[in-house]
Length: 268
Image 1: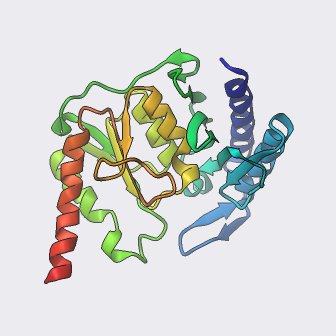
Image 2: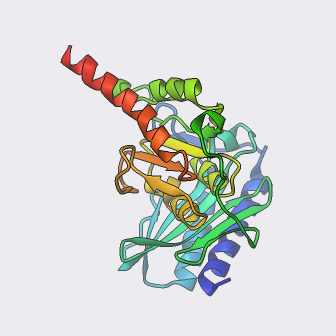
């Protein structure tokens, strides 16, 4: 384990301990949108993470979900989600995590996702593979979409952006895949894809901190991550398609059904 992975793994575990200590307690909840919430635990975790990153990696740039932006060395940027799955956490639903990623010269270089409910730490470094609690992991070998379990989610703007919601995609995949799940933490979904528990994932309107660590972990576990049309993924973009690689083209075809429907309705 490199020094970088060791440090961010320790930081992620510290944030996870904060979450578990506060789980089930009264929370201060604020609304960033109609259904988009933030708790005092999100902020407490972010403050700790930013402080630790600043101590170990002084001068690096930081982009964090709850406004913790710090300018610095533009060649090295940390992308942080202090509590992914906040709605789950606020309801006591045990599916949330911490996600920390390092981007160097525009490329994802290191990442850690810690699930404190299951004490599972997913890590990866570019070119060095992916690990779950220190053991090498890889994506599944499910070869066909009709045998695959998929996961997805619905963005906080689902009530506001009708033409680009994910409901049609969800319905189309239910008709084609073995199963579709919606657990509520994109970072864990991606980590679980990397270790073979699910076979594919797609979603709209995620943020860089939701996916940065998970994208690298999947790639290092042998999976594939792209935009819906198979092109390069932009972590600042509006769509992500991830899979074990074997079902990727089939998933693209299902997503094209949605796109063709949008075009047809728009031209009628």
